Image 1 (cartoon, rainbow, N blue to C red):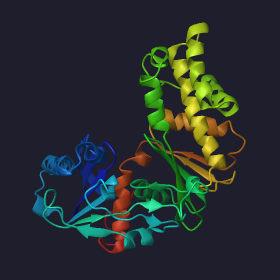
Image 2: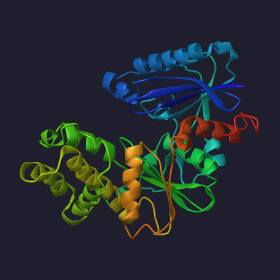
Image 3: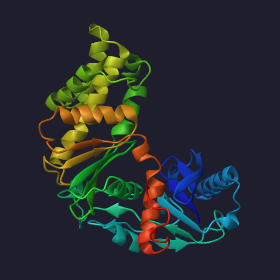
Image 4: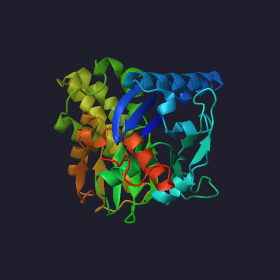
Length: 339
């Protein structure tokens, strides 16, 4: 069985062609729902998704008539995507997420129906100032989370860390359900602070190239004690009046921003994380290492910490969306089983 999986985010679209549980071809474009927001229409997004599909099929030498199922997840199901579907309300099991799938024909993308997976939102109603912090939502991270639940056979409560432009912390309960999530702007903050503020001259190459444990932990401690804004400005002070190099200063900033994320986990009402909760860390190597070190150095986090390898987090979106489709009955029970 040939399956196409489409993963569209805010800025990127990735398509994988799967056969017998393996990715046989993929393609990507730097186009996402942000382009819909900018242009005011979906034409660019439609064209990009279609072109990415065509490239993946060409790379595999497979004709579109040989594809039996097309699955899509991520921001493609938002109001700026190609098929808007309401979020499913947490707690959400794999079966419940599968029940929320919808099929739709998008003529500019594919001539047959595409099955879309909805996002997940926290269970908070009548949003106002009194409870807005408890609300959160995701589109795309839910399928990645279920892929990791299966790959790692997670059966106890856990928090899955999915760092990126918008870092997601996904709470998994003891019944292998998504209990909720909390989001920060960590990635975007790091980019903006590093490139579009007075700190740009102090950071040279921007993001940290290698971990400096002392500077990382000190940056986190500084943000915890005096606030993120002041901790950030300390990077300039270290440049002007101390002897630390650009990578050390970048580690201080990285620690300040990621340390603020850990403060979120301790205090946010969006998810309820107890100190003994298992912690599963994904993301790019330097982010994985940084988060693991910060958690290791914080007495609050007393549960087991699992830091994923590149192989363990490869093609998460595709594995996850196929798992959801299997729960819906669109894929045979033992076909395309996630590795």
